[in-house]
Length: 431
Length: 41
Image (cartoon, rainbow over all chains, first blue to last red; front, side, top):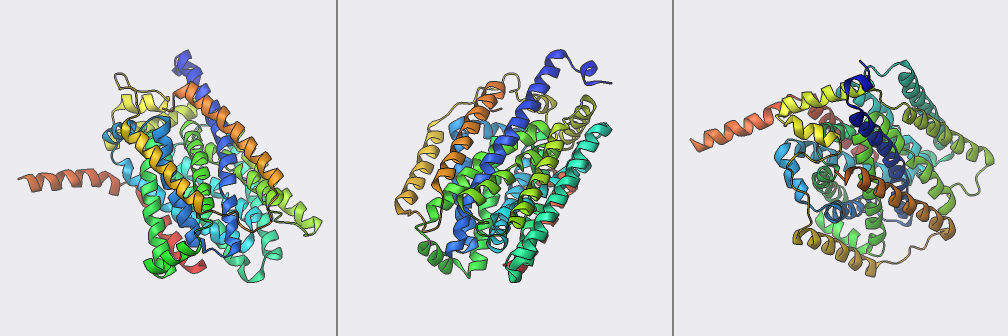
């Protein structure tokens, strides 16, 4: 039973377009997610990791409500909640997982450095493959070449991560290396599991822009609890925030950049699944390496063998991710995805026409076209205003930065944003 | 009996969630993550 025999030609063509779109989204996600970690380098100037994570999440919260309001308006959120209200639970749960994982990454960067910590937590893609296979029928009946591509890629990524872990434990500060590696791998485990809620939402038809609106409530709630608990209460947290007011804007900006990357990642998870979408967006490792080495001179003055180990390990991981990305889903596997979607629909009473239309990146028949209301424009204006207030308090941190490479990397990210944003709009109108 | 109806409805809403492994796996990983975070900080 082949793909071509079981689906009309127009649907086959549509699914191929969506797969190509998902792959493009995965690469754009990598660029933006990689850049978002750069502001966390400020941890080296004495700001508490928890404050850094909390303020990034505040930036994320503002962006997660204002960006969707700007793109499509928020009326679609109400429509999605009416169809699948149970997904709010998973969105909030995913937000909590993200907050804990992000906090761990800050500790990891502090203890073993950005360029080494990055590949370690990117082992989350291996977990994503496992969950995709076990829970959502991904890679079922995919054929041995796809399996070889995915498992071979996973093995290459594991070897790359191991090489980098050995590098970090021998070259990093001996007292903190173990803690840093644990933090990075822990973040990988949490992020890898966070893709369960992502995939669950998308095979049930929820719009990524609706999902992230609830996701961010869990994210902000969990992060606030962690910050209050671990800094010794609200008053000491407040003192830390006031003490760090000059860098708060840069951290919020990091959160904002992360959201752009995550929106692309959500579309990748929707259209190519988590077993392929996550390794693709993990190309953020290469971007993180570029930011770390070119902009922050992370490995400056170290021996050539260390450079070779870090670059070799990273390239090995990238090769693995590439092999996984090229193993796109076949017709039989697509049918198994559909079975998983039908199972979700039956379990939670979600109408099948809604699930099918949204899986194909379309609206259901008779569904009103989303429009922006006064409320949406208020969200955009409020979020922009808050960013501007923090920008007036900001000062460029006194740390060694290379502005030339920073501008070049930012320009490359903007090109990807425009190309991928246009492709999404043309193919799905952000459905 | 509006209260009883509301309770039934709430139970109907939660029941499939609590029987869903997709709910328990992320929840357990989250709790484990909180323990690791307490250790590394």
